[in-house]
Length: 157
Image (tube, rainbow, N blue to C red; front, top):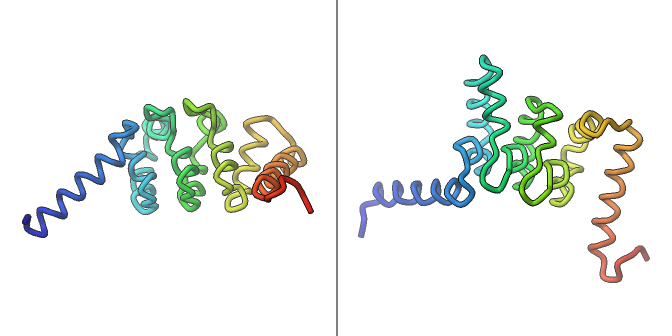
C-alpha cells in the first residue's frame, strides 16, 4: 500500500488529468471547471495588465469549443459566471461550442438563467442588439418551456 502522501499526489494527478485531458482544457478551463473562484480571480488579476493576454485566456476554446465562461455556465458555477462576465465582450461571450450552443444557451439549458439573469440580459441586449423587453420575453419563454417540459402532460393544468 502506498504512503498517504503518495496517494494524495496520485489522486491530484488523476483529477488534473480528468479535468484537463478529456477536452484538452487549458489550466484556466480546469480551474473554472473545478469551481475555484479564488484561483479564477487570481488568474484574471495576473493578466489584467495585458489586455491581449487576458483576451487570449478568456477566448481560448478547448477541443469541444468551450470557453471558460461556457464551462462555468455548464457546471452552474454562478459566482464564477458573475466574475467572468465582467471581462467578456459581446464577441467572446457569443462564441459557440462545437455543439452549437453559446454561453447564454447553455445557461438556459441548465436552468440557471434566474441565478444570474441580469448579467445575461445585459449580454443579450448587447450581443443580439435587442431591447430590454425582447430580452425579458426570451427569458420568460425559456422559463415557461422548461417548466412545461417538466410536467407529465406537457402543458399547463
